[in-house]
Amino acid sequence: MNKASIYGLTQEQLVDWLAQHGHRKFRAVQVWEWLYRKRVGSFAEMTDVHPDCLKLLEENFVFVTMTEHLKQESADGTRKFLFRLQDGNLIETVLMKHKFGLSVCVTTQVGCNIGCSFCASGLLKKSRDLSAGEIVEQIMRVQLYLDAQGQGEKVSHIVVMGIGEPFDNFENVLNFIRVVIDHKGLAIGSRHITVSTSGLADKIREFADTGLQVNLAVSLHAPNNELRTRIMKINRAIPIEKLMDAIDYFLEKTNRRTTIEYILLKDMNDRVEHANELADLLGEERRDLLNVNLIPYNPVDEHSQYQRTETEAVRAFYDTLKKRGVSVSVRLEHGADIDAACGQLRSKQIKKDNNLAEAALS
Image (cartoon, rainbow, N blue to C red; front, side):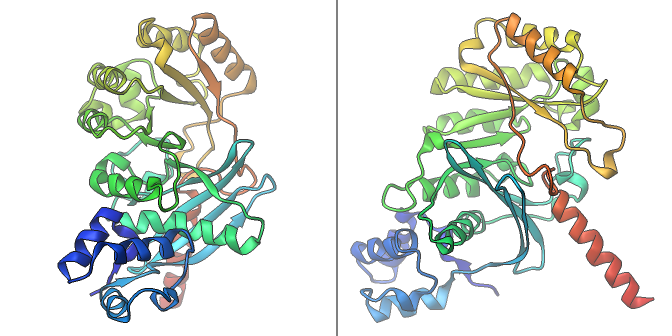
């Protein structure tokens, strides 16, 4: 049986676990600093921790649960990592450079069951959730990559928007957040973290009740139920009315500005009439706390029914929302010269592996 990732414990959980095994709190504080401030790669490097404590940790935990299978580098500085997990599954993690800092997009599940009809992430169904440690390790692997460059750069922002539905892996995602925001560790600010959901209304409410000052992004992608159900099958179970009620609860509970994600699909949801319908849906009473983020579509071979919206149509959609008083932005694209769509690199690699396996058997 594989040992658990040491990165999967919050500091409080590490304190409790060591206490249960006869070690005092200060040992956990020592270990925590070695993990996240000094960023060592083994327990043996924790030179001021008692040998008995180190032996106990070594018997129960590991640092590495994934290996780098492939890395793509874009001209704009984007780095896409394809990691292979201990069970052989592949996941993607992306490092993006912005004017405001370095952002990492993390994956939370192996595959996805939400079934959005335009998305590369859902081409393969979910086989399992990632542990909190596997999610944290994605940040650590990127930070260690940055450390090795010798430029003193640090991950400053996190978007939980990779493969999978974060709120379908709720507890592990919460523990991941608690690890990375710990002020004695990586100390990434809560307000520098955004969690994206396809619209699990009950979990949006539960997330609001955690008290975490983390940003929320909701994938809407259509202004009415008929169109959204065609694009996102989750809308059959959680229609727009129920989703908007949950968003209202989140806004009231947290007073946190929330992003409405809207991917533009040519001749599907990108007309001016759709922009006006979206403005009506959002309503004037919510507008101070909502921002619509328009997302240019990255075509996926398996979803050839969808095409990228032309620049003129993007501008018309944007201008319409602006005139209606809606806060709106167009997402800056990263990694356009590599496998830009989330899940695309993983999907291509799995196809390649399968083709090689079939060739070997023939």
